[in-house]
Image 1 (cartoon, rainbow, N blue to C red):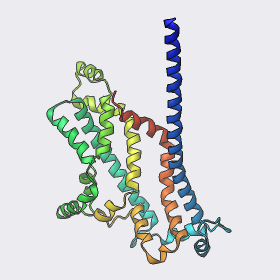
Image 2 (image 1 turned 45 degrees about the vertical axis):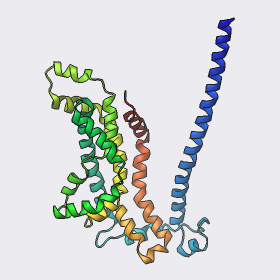
Image 3 (image 1 turned 90 degrees about the vertical axis):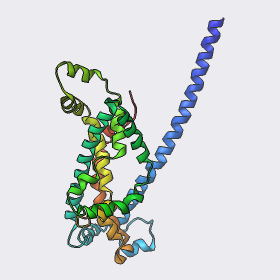
Image 4 (image 1 turned 120 degrees about the vertical axis):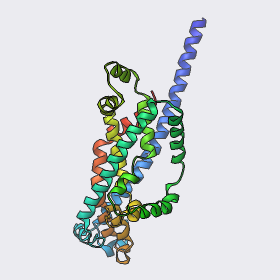
Length: 295
């Protein structure tokens, strides 16, 4: 009798738990669908606007184009300039800036996170706490002081700026720290028995092991730097990127009212990064979630 009551109670509890999980899942899926749908609608609407004629758009912004004006892309390609830098050069500058900043940042954060996660000292604990605190500080408030510092050091418009400014970010460090926190110490101990030193363990065991995580974080970082216009505008004004070009492009009086031309420029600069993210989205999701959970 008691066993039957316990079994029925367990079944009832599982049934209630199942209902709660379904409700949570439906709610989370609805929120995500609305969030994703907003972005998809915005991107789709921008693409439709980019194919419309200027006066037609001003007359009815939400109507479908009667004639597809693909020439808007050609006109945007010719018009999108910063000084003598055209769209192709801005694309090269964007790849150089985003790629260089990503490689330097990911490598620096990876190595530092391994040291902090695996070598427990008072300093490493303090550094981890300090990093969490830094993430809470709005970076925009420090830009004026940073500009004065880099200007005095002669690093404005210098390739050395990338090394000194983007030597790893807090969120990269946190993700790598979570990853290494879940890696068993047995790998390093076994390597030490075979005579491997700290550098050998890091370079030949830990770095290859963290490669999927590094690629996932690298892609997210690359996308962030691809869309970063403020840093380039302040510290690398002679090397305008696509984001900087678009920011300056839309500030021109003749462009503000020519939405089809502006959105054509946005689509051209956005498509490469959308394709990149779509190609690696599964790897990004799996590895960033794994890095946020300590084993």
